Structure formats: C-alpha cells, structure tokens
Image (cartoon, rainbow, N blue to C red; front, side, top):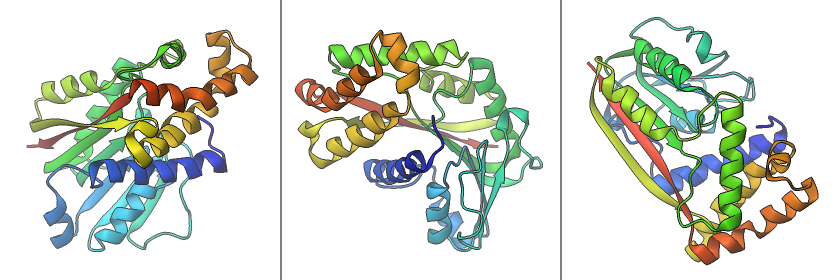
Length: 262
C-alpha cells in the first residue's frame, strides 16, 4: 500500500471504523490491569499510531510502544506514555524476552508468507510476559455474498498477494499457529461481520468507502493489469462497487484471535 498522506488519513479513519464495529479497541481481558497497573503494551505494524495513541490516552498509567516498517507515526505530538520505533518484525523485535503485558497486531493480511507468519508470531510470543496476552486482528481477502465484479477484484487481490510470496487467507493460519504454540492457552477466535454498501446504512457506506474503494484505489497500477482493464476502467469499477455490494448485501468478516501466555 502507498504511504502518502491520503493513505495515512484513510488508516486513521479505518481505525475508528473498526472500533465502532467491535465497540472496543481489543477483546483480550486486559482492561482492568491496564487501568490499575503500569503495564507495557506493544503494537506491531502500528501505522500512523491511531490505535496506540487512543489507548495511551485511555490508560495513562500504562506505557505503549509502536513499531512499524515505515515511520508514518508521529515523532513529537503524542501522549507522554507513547514511544514509536521504526523496525521490521521479520528481523526480530528489538525487545527482551517476557517484556510486554499485551502485544497487538492488526491488518497485515498481505504482508507475510506462511513461514513468515510463524516467525512473526513466535516473536510476539517471545516478548510477551507470562500471563500476558497476544491479540491479532485480521480480515481475509474474502467477501461473502459478493457479486461478479467483487469476485473479480477478490481474485486479482489474491493473485497479487500470492505473486509477492504472501498469503491472502490468513485467519485460519493464525488460529492454528496460536493453537499449536506450547506457550499459549485460552485461545479465542471471534469475528464481526463488516457490511459493504448502503444496504447496511451509514456503516456499510463508510466501510465501502474506506476499506474497499479507499484501499483499492492505491492498488490501481498493480490490479488493473491482472484484471485486464485500463486504470480508467479500474476507477469506474471501484466507483460502481458500492451499488453491487448493496444489491448482493455483501460483507466481510473481521477476526480477533487472542491467547494468553503461561
């Protein structure tokens, strides 16, 4: 994805969309310890830092660290209990073992191969304290009740992702990696359905605008050749996507998969 100002603004808006969908910023049972104790929280792939800074404001007694490959996060105007670091999780997280009470990672569906997911999750487990929690929030490149143009876009997204060596259906893999890790217990896998299009009211309209049209607009150069259309035709397809999603009442599933380290 591009890392320009327009995309960063979209990621900020997307954060609030997912918070609204879930009615919370996380599902792991950590609210009480964040409020009462000086906990350490890590957000891997933090992007512009919206999730992290909101939690830093809500839980001023805890400390929050974000790490991302691209330094799109704020360097000066941020809560005093917030730190941002530029780095690549595939090279190992620059933190000691058993350091964080809560480790979070969200929406990196097209970023890793299967073996890289295993490497990254192993790092998340390593830096989590005993009795700490790990939570991953992901959406597969899969839409339900989708129409013909939506199906064509989905196939193009999957082809693009797999051509880079990454995988596009990640939630079953994440579930199994956490399930098979001998250091983890209390595994939970929850999902919420995110509707696209005006059939679902304002939520569906915003989801279509931010998570589909907004995100896919930045991939025009990559996806239009796969779909065998010009970039102008691709733009027209995106503009008509909301109508098709509404006609078919399409939706996706956003998962939160979390477990406790013992």
